[in-house]
Image 1 (cartoon, rainbow, N blue to C red):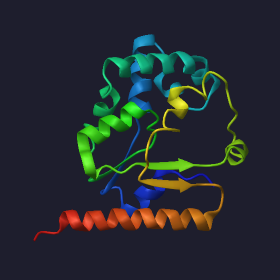
Image 2: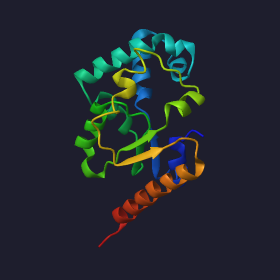
Image 3: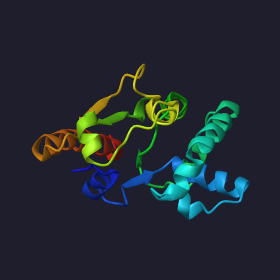
Image 4: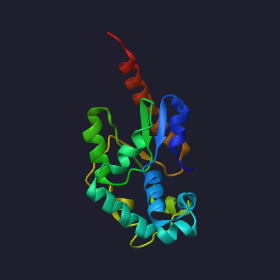
Length: 178
């Protein structure tokens, strides 16, 4: 079973929770600047893999110039009180959100064993899967929540229930008028 950010949005409702993706604006801008098919960069095709390494380097250069470049793009259109940024992969992204939103921001790490990841189709590619874009948050970040998704539905549901309970509590506090 693969946990999707959609699980959280369904539980909270799309009027309350938005799924934001940093990779979308990155891929869109990269496609524009390089004359590529944006939609094909979104799917898990050989087309995307052909450009993946260069796109990662290009995105890193953009972030080095302006760490909040892609973060600002994705939050501009979000109107819901809860945002799940489903593909945060770099410390600079976490740092930007913490600096911009402070204590209201919660970090959630979703992890699975390498065996489970392989069963789901993951295949380690040297130079790509060990780059910051894939493992930049593996060390040095104290996550508020860690969700382990190793195909145990009961354990996964229990972890998600605790996170959803916390979120609902915060929503109730934020709507309470003393």
